[in-house]
Length: 612
Image (spheres, rainbow, N blue to C red):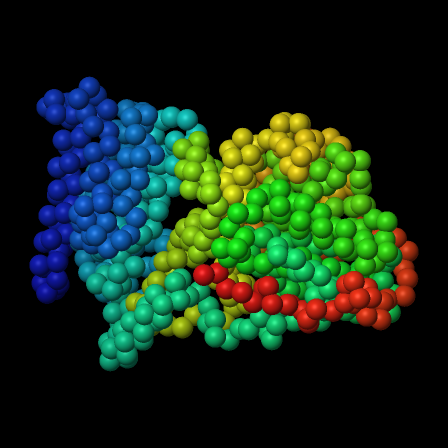
């Protein structure tokens, strides 16, 4: 190796060489399978999991390739997780293993020859000049990237059913992301440089940030002190006109002289707070609906505490969604209303419509489903966590009631994109001592909500695991057999192209389940950014397919769809106008008489409650 002029780094380099040589020795032993030179990878007697074990620590706190005891630090013991998800069912293609081994040996040789001249390529975590100007840090990053590529290649080489392969990939990727040298002060060149430039002030600030986040119970993604619900988020003017133990119903003050005669109800997900639909005036979907001349109502879910720990899926359908529909009808004096459901709010709205249809009722004229699953055939990465054992565990856990903590759910969703939603903030907040900039969406994302355990267990069993809504009559809700063939109203279905929570195929699945007149629209970006895309800003694109044509697969629909610049909001507004009825004078007050008198100003107190 060429180490001339870099003798001060020799001790570290010697340690790195010893580690690399140890890996090469393990490769050789693994490839030979304990049967001498010439044996092929995967041959009888070989252990194809040896390289995973070499990299991935188990719960005994052993060191990873960079000398950091992840198991002992409370980080995920990914070696244990890998063994659990892989078990004895993992098989490898011998030819592919040999290809991976040869590729690794070639890249190791190249890295060995480069020595401290090696530079990490193609990863934004190591893109700054601080990494390039620090030979030791650059070499550690290059070693990490090589090892990461090899581990992922091994994960891709696993043979087995699709769920096992996906779980192996997920487990390996989680550990790779967690063990990046950028996540540790001892290896992060940027953090070290900043510490020197600030004379240690960045480290002191990082420790203070860490203590603050430990106290609040989650990693800060934004400067939460800047925001206050009702002051600078959730500011659209309105009044709480009804409440029960599950929700408050907010009616918004009209912004037009006339409104459509058919009122409009929004059902947001109870897994989050409603103000994702009302962040700021210029990106508020709620305000946009009011501006379009709709008499607008929204369900504001109560953040469950122990008093709601026994509540079930049936309770939320009968006493919340269906109750909200009836109250809106009563207040507006309308025979039918228009309704919208977002994410699991859409699943609950669809369930309520099916229950009502089974009872011979159709109080909803049209329904909009935003990033909603009714057919749970395609649930994306979340499917990794759902199997019979997992669901049984939750059913036993919540057999007598209980709460699913909101922070646990938030952590799960964050680790679906760990580099963006976890490690990025660990590095910035704690290693560099930075305060993340104010961002309303991330403030909302950190404002978690609990779920009643029985509600959660029913949802997992009947929908995620058994997908009963696609089998008419097999799911019973509120005493009625669910059959979406009876839900014949016109629907507007929206899905986001890069959504990792409700994949575009999952959102599209509703077109095959609902028999009425349909319009399906695909927007760019993900689960939240795709939905919260104000029409006035003209950002991104949306796609619309030929009218009335909904092939079985979303890929076939996409192949025939036409791209349109800007937000889908305008297309939706034009569609909803056709179902909203004639215009009438806007009401001068919210609510109706003493029965639905104003309780308090929007956004109400339910949304203010924090998850404990």
